[in-house]
Length: 471
Image (cartoon, rainbow, N blue to C red; front, side):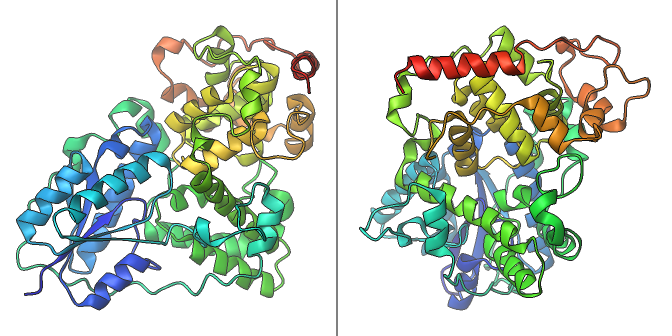
């Protein structure tokens, strides 16, 4: 039998529109799908690692259904894959491309290690519509502002989604696999894991159904509804895109089809998908996006970097006294997700009103988000903080009180998440209390706090610091 190919799965846990998988099937070689709990996985936060484990389990079932299986191994990627290649006499190791610095360093090490042994390695696209280096300015550089980037790719055709294979050729003998239960990928969720699990939509079939529902029922009003955290106005697909349970191309083509059919919100949805592309474009060209101020001049700004200060602790626990902020932070802890409008509000409050470095918020989100995405999370935080790629950054100071009146006019969002003061709190608010550590001492019966920093006070202080900095 022909020597097999090791198919190394990471954030591409689907069968449909999978360029690497499609080309691998076309070779006619036996395929050995493998997932490695490697150094990059180990460094992920509690919620994303927990959610990744559920995606791996779902994809393993999908492979079983077409006569294949997913081999699980744990350890440093190069060592694990080397051992598997020797066990199986594999002739090649293939994977889908990643773009964040940690993953790129890992992949470079794997590629170099196998090149020295004469085993073929290949990486494929599939996580993005357009590879970052394929989009250039007129002078051959990269785009630093979203709108010109969006115009540059607006008329590009990413191609049609690829069909799912009906069968993967199996090897004569399967290598041994570890048990995902032994990895305990949800161990750091503690009692919050069972709560967060209630709000998840896991796997390729569920992701496709979610997209279909959104196109049928939600995309028409998306332009307006997407800003309302009190209603179900977004697609919810960020969770599934994160783990590659559905491809960005599938979502993009669905948006284009809906636009052709006359859905008014389809163009706004398409632009949101392109924002994700822009985030990866920036991350590829400026890897510092995830760890340092994108604009170096912000290194002098007097942000507090105390991650455990009284103010930051209140922010993390949803006890700032600003209802929009607190509702959003509770939604995050109970569900692993947060509405995009709410993300802007909590980010602005932390970096402007509390004068705290964006990296502290970035790292907390990386711990708590089930739809954590290295590019989107970093760009979102730097954009709202003012240190990122934006023409007029720092004057954007959101007032959480006026924003609440505008986007939660009936108080439904706040009522869903803040139990204090309610005789019979709803399930969502009770879920937050059930998810948090007992040492936080939170209950529905305690008094809701006064604002630790008021809306007007915080804005004045932030703008004064900006002015004093010499801008």
